[in-house]
Length: 125
Image 1 (cartoon, rainbow, N blue to C red):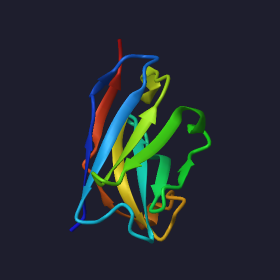
Image 2 (cartoon, rainbow, N blue to C red):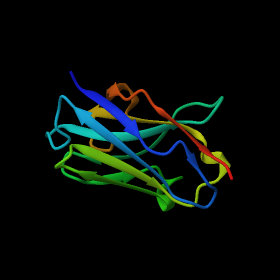
Image 3 (tube, rainbow, N blue to C red):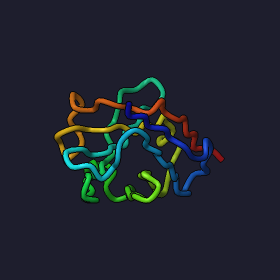
Image 4 (cartoon, helix red, strand yellow):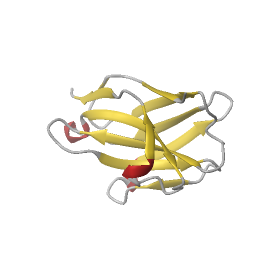
């Protein structure tokens, strides 16, 4: 059974960088055919796909967030991470990590089969 767990600070100040890590168990992030996405949901709004890191380390980002987003991985720990720079209160959201099967570009909602429980990040001074 694959499990994903988000971790990181729950409060970030405006203009700073939001950093989150997703720890994966029950499966390797380097296994062919899978990619690993970050998604967020602001309060009262829908889900927004942010970006993905594929099994081979390739990354792809939402055009609207590309200039501020970076996704990396630590294969020795079976973790992948999100950094979002220059945050504003509009970046307040529940952040999720998810596994995507058969889609290295990572934005196909129907192929996101395992999700973390999500972590709330509030941007406030």
